[in-house]
Amino acid sequence: MSQSEESIESSSTNTASVVELEDVQKTYHVGDHTVNALIDVSLSIKKGSFWAIMGPSGSGKSTLLNVLGCLDRPTSGRYLLVGQDVSTLDDNGLSELRLRRLGFIFQSFNLIPQLTVQENIELPLFYLGENARLSAKKAIELADLVGLSDRVQHRPMELSGGQQQRVAIARSLANDPAILLADEPTGNLDSTTSTQIMQLLADLNNQGKTIVMVTHEEDIASYTSNKLYMIDGGIERIERN
Image (tube, rainbow, N blue to C red; front, side):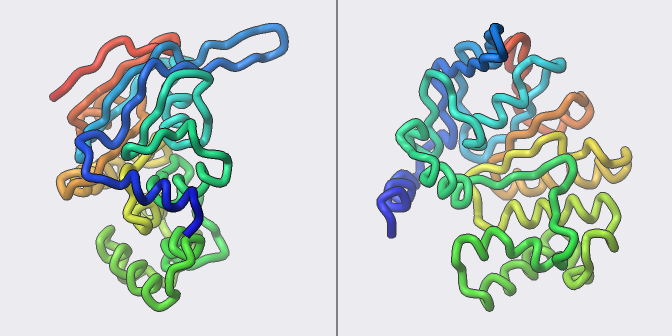
């Protein structure tokens, strides 16, 4: 096990908070202009909670999700993920952290068209170096969990949009992540399918999964227990159900 792996493993203690942000700022420099994408964001996300991040375009919600997903580093401030100070990790350490601790669900599904449903779900396990037989078994179990046990040998183009998103959700669960990060997960779906996907996410949350989702739709956000509203890079307010 590498040093970064040991660091990640040692931080996986039973803490009340999966995420702790302390005075996080993110600044971009575009030519002569400075863009303050995040300003003094402090936030605690408890294990098993379900969050919606909301706000107008340019409010900072996508930047916040990227920081939470270790896809972007804060300019300043502190980010603890399952007790691990993310700022102490190099690029390789961040990659390992994403692979071991995070699950991602995208608006556009991001499935590999040449792979079957089973193979798409197995991808995180492949990169983790898991045993092929056990990976296949887990992928089939996850396909069944999201209602696609009869589609494991199909390819994405043979599936509906809702089915593709179910595959993406199953894939996001393969590494048993500490937190699921969803970026407009119903953005490409009709209203009926959106309801089905949100019910699936709500069921996963009821089973103990921690979920943070960016959405601009209040009806989609109504499935969550916490709504974080952003404006101009800062937190405007938090509503709890």
